[in-house]
Amino acid sequence: MSESGGSTSAAWWKTPLLHRLSKLQQREDQIFLVLALVIGGLTGLAVVAFIVLTERIGMRLYPAGGAPWRRLLFPVAGSLGVGYLLYRYFPNARGSGVPQTKAALYAREGRITLRTVLGKFFCTSATLASGIPLGREGPSVQVGAGIGSVLGRLIGLRTEQVKKLIPVGAAAAIAAAFNTPLAAVVFALEEIVGDLNAPVMGAVVLASATAWMVLRVLLGDHPLFKVPQYQLVHPAEFAVYAVLGVAGGLVSATFAKLLLGMRERFLRFPLKMAWLHPVVGGLLVGLMGWFVPQVLGVGYGFVGDALNGKMAFNLMLMLVVLKLLAVTTSYASGNAGGIFGPALFIGAMLGGTVGTAAHHFFPAYTASPGAYALVGMGAVFAGIVRAPMTSVLMIFEMTQDYSVIVPLMIANLVSLFVASRLQKEPIYEALAVQDGIHLPTAKTRQRPGQSLVVRVMRTATELLPAEITVREAVERVRTTELLSWLITDQRGVVGVISLSRLERELTESADKQLAELVDPLAFPHVHPDQGLDLALERMGANQIEILPVVNRGDVHKLEGILTLRDVLHSYGVNATDRA
Image (cartoon, rainbow, N blue to C red):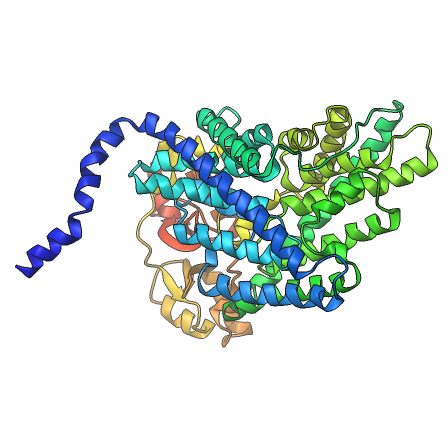
């Protein structure tokens, strides 16, 4: 009786929802467009709250002309407190938010939890308000995408429809964060979806426009930066803009390599100390801010000064170096925040530096330094984020100045070329790989089903614990006919080892643990949606006959195993008689 009553009371609120669900599923297209409006409105409100919280709290914590100890204390205290919150309660709220958004779309069935959305909002707000020089735009993307994911799952949309809401929320976030509705649409399609012709474009445009209108109603119709009208003084200026593009590419590649290199080192530290890592970034920022207050925060006010030619050459040059170090260290150490805003800041200072030098030596042939600061913003953004179309449209919409579009395109193209030559892997993809997230390429998503790993893989049984020694491992495998085994620890699979490697290690260091023989951040593997041809290629390159099949959202999550025998059998080759 009590069980029956409990069941009834527990299900009373579910019955109406399930009753409506069948009707909702028949009208998903209409529901989807309504959701785009709702997501745009809610995301616009969230971004406005971001802006108000970070700017007003920051002004109170370390006001202009305030005591130097404030500029040291608050970044350290903020990074310490937020570091603990991220470690203890919101582990998915670290970093930029853009790689996590793409991971939700392609590796996690469109799932971003409400807990992550709230954690991202509050932790990023506290981080930026304390003076850590990261951006709010990337986190806004994850918050907007999360709002879409939560609402879509709440009303019971199919997984494919929920996934389509991810770029919708992302576009709304960029539209409100930068006051750039057109660039937001291009960014969502160019960077998040990877397809400018995606069928979700209509909803993306609708959400972007809605979020933009919310921003205008609440904060007014003002461009992010107010700049004077520029014009091309002489055709020879194109050469200076090309030089600026080269400098932007070099700075972009340096930024990416420095950030990825430091972050890799932090990720190798013990996980139990991860809550303390952000303090490294906070301490460095505090020490820099003690002497150079302009390092603190995103610094859009100083960007405006550079665009209007109000900053000295020495200060701009110094800020390029200091901001580069402060941002990369803050991000790599695990603080919550993005790289959009810092990219624009560094670009403006770099452009202002180049423009000041050019105008000093060739005053009759060059525009004022502000024009080069404007182009520099786009050049560094394009080089770091690798979204050239978004960069051009964003600079135009933020400044409402069309006169520098051609110089901007030249500098962007050169910067993108130089940066991609020096840093092959785009920064968001590299950051995702460091987190164990392997996003599919467009080619992977278009593979025919008959050649996929998922059709051939089977349950994994060939496992060796990472904590055993080489001697113990050899004793275990001697009774089998296998030539390769997976190594696992508490995280899951962390590597693959062959019999020949074990035999070599047995003669040199028999008491060494297997964990010391593998790199958990980079080991051979495949994903269920990849092709068998790629699996054969990786087996050959690593001289192994077995590959772990892992989840795209977590490289350590083992979903199955793929053997050379099974692959050859799928192609109709008898592999029983091996030479």
